[in-house]
Image 1 (cartoon, rainbow over the protein chains, first blue to last red):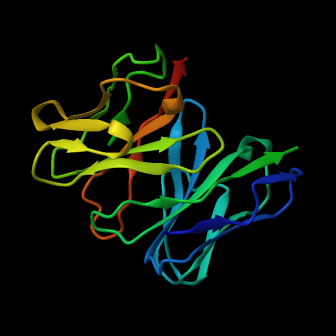
Image 2: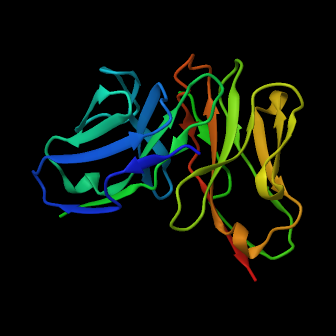
Length: 112
Length: 115
């Protein structure tokens, strides 16, 4: 069974801090994704990566960056956290084509 | 802009009632379609998917969905809901993103089933 592991379930940070969210998948998937989930807005794609060191912006990349140095690991970075980045962050991985994405448990991030 | 729309934001049903959740998308070409479910405190998991062939697809836990190309719709149905179906449901579309499997999600529908 596919396992996507996010490093933290809950995280509290202060405005201006640099925040790292980590995600690891164990199925050798080519593609990895970061979403944020907000009530009434569904899931919105922040960034995705289709190969090591390759990345593409999603729909809401502003204020975020990503890193994929190894195939199994995809990191989301909030360069200078702001209160409007308080949200649930979901990581997913997938093989592409017509295969579904597999999701982690999510990180609920609060920026104070 | 490309979009996925779920008409019902919050649905409340009694056990044994029938369920239909609407999903419409705005792409004209070939699409792959998915329904995901998120039970309270759990990760999103796949309910069912449609790529080609029979437009009526069956998923886990008695759910099914019908792809109607002319209506750009992929509605989710279940004949008789249970309390354990209480969850948030997301429709998602892959609008021919090549090999990345990139998805566009709807806003989600929260289903509350009363025992």
